[in-house]
Image (cartoon, rainbow, N blue to C red):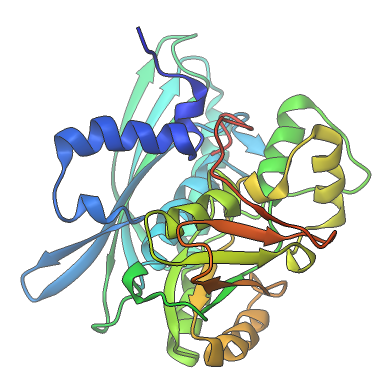
Length: 334
């Protein structure tokens, strides 16, 4: 009998198979089947973006953040990349018996600060406590609603060959931060999670530059999984340049030591933008003025040479396919 494995939570091929063969089979509707980070739902007088997510990160505290910070940031960013303005969040806690109240207070404080920075209100929630050994300290589920201030929203159908791919900063920081904390690893340089709410930065780009066709935050499965989700079953492909990928030396060294590829490592405070070629420099300039976009980089372009594929031009002069992750490299990372 087939059973759920950690690979089903990786954001890769096993995840997509699970979604397609079970969830799409039973829950299918025109909104869900768009496969976006948030659902854009029509309401009387307009539309809203709505998303939900669960966070099971281990450990719940790590350099640069905690489970509460990524819970708020993750939901805010899922709404923001759909071009909506995040407004309200609900929070559900599942807490294991024995968790110190001081830990819960630290996490609540972290969530409040993140929500304040993003300009969102935590307006509803639920708390359940389970017996010792029945959970792993704490799990959090969040749902967020965002509103549209204008009629424009980026959509994958807008992407065409010639468009440019931009990432808003260094990749792999979050995953390596959590892993180093979990395993007690010490590297020469401190590695901190990039967890952050990106809605204000994204709003600045949409208001100041134009030309944005699509956005996504590359969380589980990293940049590789997200780009593959974009090109899947499409008549275009994406080629990225290895020499242009922004990776901190400390993260690169940690990945080499651990046998990981930064392209597949999770991020919690980065966004991918696909923009018109003539607007790429304008977008880049705006991003670099924001504290969360100082390391923004053009990493590749959309093409029609390899439809449905993500390729990388390596520093060795070889072009290879960047596939979806097949298994879970780093379980319980978000």
